[in-house]
Length: 190
Picture (cartoon, one colour):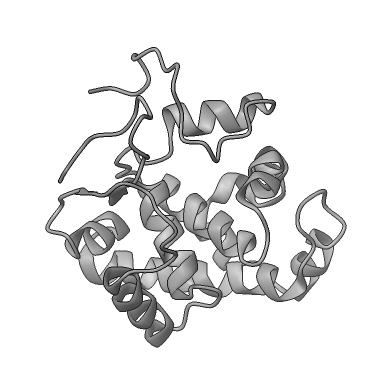
């Protein structure tokens, strides 16, 4: 099923129906398997910025993030120095110095993983042998899988990649399809 072509009338209750960006994100991106390393990097970095905030806040600033962070070009970001990080503190993004510096650090780790395995896609989807895990979204904010990936990414040197951030990331990139029952994007796995 292609989410982009299906007319969606029933959505997960967490979607703010007054925010067209959020509705579009839910309908076309969230839970759809992603395999582009550029998009996987962008989503991971945005999830890191989301830590402690709402996803809607980050989503509303996504275009500003793309502009500020060179369209999430991992190689360019890996070369950011302290001056560039300071400059980003005046951009219309989430202005958290630690998260900005983490983005630079994480870009370097991301590239190390690409070098080691050929792609970040091979790394992240390797945890499930390329398979999506279907679950109906509930109040869970972490899983044994997100615990495992979080631990590995931290060991490799990434920052702001706790299990809750990684669980949300896995849902966003479609490793987990966690649309709720009653949502037109729900695919029952039970």
